Length: 141
Image (cartoon, rainbow, N blue to C red; front, side):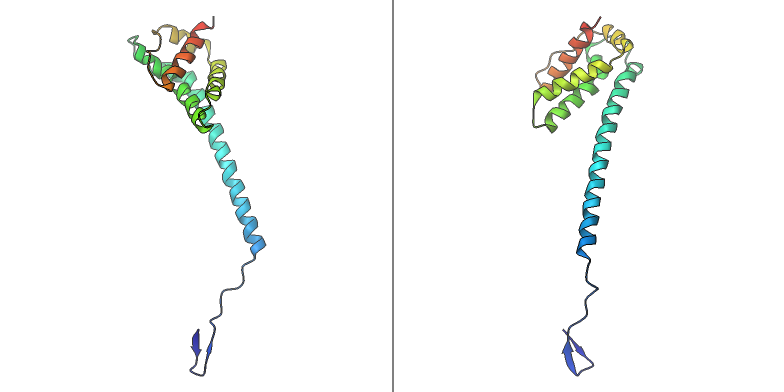
């Protein structure tokens, strides 16, 4: 309340009323836009992982050590583990992703992998995913 020229008390005028329908529509559109952006980011990250898996052989150390195998197939195993965690820890999702990554593996990648010893054994889920992918890639003729 403010005093109007000393004569009486009046309420201060507020800004014009907000059009609730327009605001709610804008919020809905904004949410849809953000959801589409998230879907696009997920798609691009999956495609980026595939591309990285195809081209990783150029960045390997010339000595054939088992630790180098992680540089070849580690990105795919990490991506599979991320999908598992995103789905609440469902291990079948990781197996599906590994099968998908196996389909995208080129003969060149398998030839490079054959020059290196098998993946070292570890105790975590990520190591298990790497061993599974390594075994499946080496078993393809």
